Length: 229
Image (cartoon, rainbow, N blue to C red; front, side, top):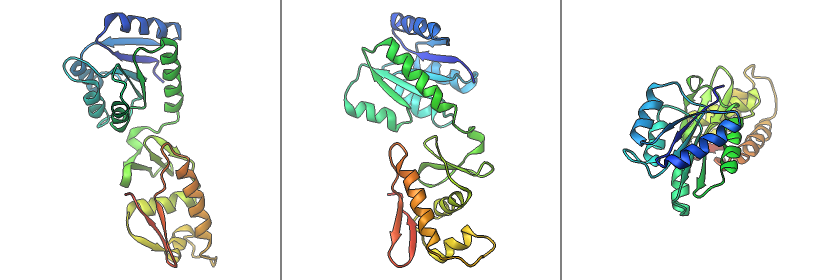
């Protein structure tokens, strides 16, 4: 995995300080001061391990850069800004940032957050293996994995088939018998209540996501439906 961190910051002294701390932690760094240049660099150059992105930038602000990058890459993005309002932080995260720190920040804390981002990124799937599905989920058919916002669910093969089926038809009610046929492709004679146990496990794993996804609804006396709001 690359150890290059792209710093997008229009304050030269702050950028130099961050570069020094990253170097001490064993990372290489590259510095750009313009949002438009940073976006072009990310589109055309080798992808860094992570991006430290200021919000108030000339050319193109950091939030717009973040939004644009998320259209073609899942590179970890840590936004930093003097704008401390909760709405600004939430907007950054909703646009696809992985983390957000407010100025003034401790360079040591920033490096610690970079390390945490890179640890999480090591478990991500290559984007080429993922097929977008409903509600922001993505399916890795070959790897039998389902991802939500770059968080991979640890699913058994049966759980994978069940959730994939629900994701392919959001809003549709599936009877237990229909889902049972999906679970056991050899049509063995088992109770349709087995489906309930598998759905319970899937719900538990969805609830462990950040933020939790409680999107599988029970339809009394029938079965289940995927509700994505």
